[in-house]
Length: 625
Image (cartoon, rainbow, N blue to C red; front, side, top):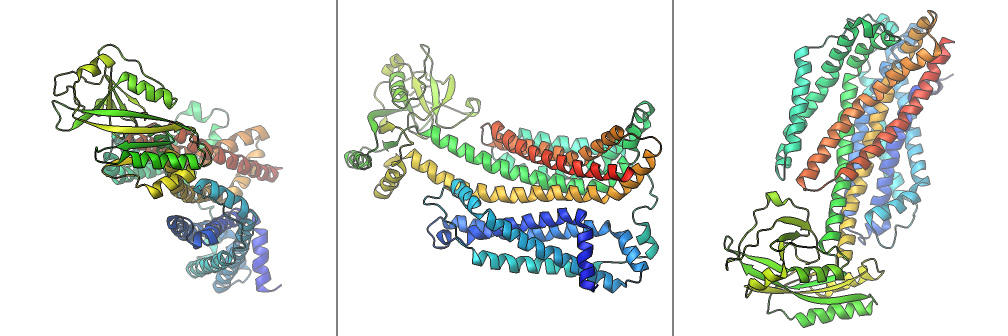
């Protein structure tokens, strides 16, 4: 058997541990390759689609590449620590340190080569499905046709060949064989019981509590100012949570004899503090990486929802035209819009209203005030809820979600009529961006001559009609949509453009977030399986004393649950607070979006846990029989 064959058999023999390393690396290669397929797609390369999309894909591709380098490096380092005893045995058989490093180098090259080919193969298999998903998320008209991505294959092969070569050289050059006796003992050295500081444990509650409070109380631009200090405070608190508070709680539980000696608690708690201490850095890393994933995807999804919601609410018409000046040629614009709508056979109902503005006593600017009957006519035309007012009631109307308590609105017109708003509603039927007042008709009649007025023309109908996008494009190309004298809006077309812009960011963020999350799961897998041999030996000994299979399952279940869900639950709390802060900043609710993102990640983690738990328990049970 040659040395290369020996290295190959070592990889095959350690397939249990190498499987996660191989699959994670292959997934990373596949994601990089997928981005390369998008970045080099002829439709994007020819400039027929937004250049920002292509630039974003290309940037994201290299971000994943840099992350992959550190991920593979960490995975390889974790893997080598579990093989100390194997290295010791090989050196006892006469293997020199140089041969050991050469063996590790060859093993890593074999894995890297297989992962690169596997990632490209999987990417090709799912390329069409991914392109279809990309079309939908990116809102690309005309579709992304499948093509054979020669350039993407070449770039991926070269990039990951260099990556695995550099990591293999680095790992083999820094690999220290150490003393033979230390290698043989491996992780069986006697260790002192981990200790935890009560003060540092209390500091965890102070740091995380302070970070959460500041984040939840932040409003508007304060959230951006507090972003970095809150992130630092919560990160330090999270690190101490896993290194100090968790160990402190375990020691306290062990000191309570009634709990410690109850059922199988002794087996669970006896070495749990060692494992928490050993895994603290991994937990912290997984927690931070997962939090970044939750926040990135949740923020992008939430922002897209907010934009979509606001565009839909801000203007419920197929087209609206607002003349802001008396000098503008209204006939020219309305005739042009009518002609375009008729040309594309778009069915609409047209209405014209006059929005009146009045001087206010406390404010130098004018305030738009309309009658209740006018508002309800527009609401009926656009199929939006009408409003009812009491005799002296005034309501403020805005197309965006705002808080009336935080608004400083005028209360009296210059003629002395009280129009202080009693409540604020979100509606876009008036077709204006600012806040307007709606008053009962009898109060409106008392307002007198307005200081100014604006002509509003609306074309109401179904915004989902097929030709709306084409008509909107023609209207915007022919008529300047926004000037100092007028404003034209085609909400269906605007929404399509917004979705296209946010779709690119969401698509990139989604992939990067998934890569981070899968990597976090792989870290946990490595840590769990590094303890497998120790668990087999321990439970084999305890089984001889009478440990039953149900008891074994219960102990292992609790251990694996703690390992898999402790950092994820903390990350979800961090993510939920961050998304709540984002919602406060935009004065809107992101509960549904936050619940969707966190729920999907939790389900993925649950499936991952069930699979790993099944095979882990199976191996331990096989060892004690």
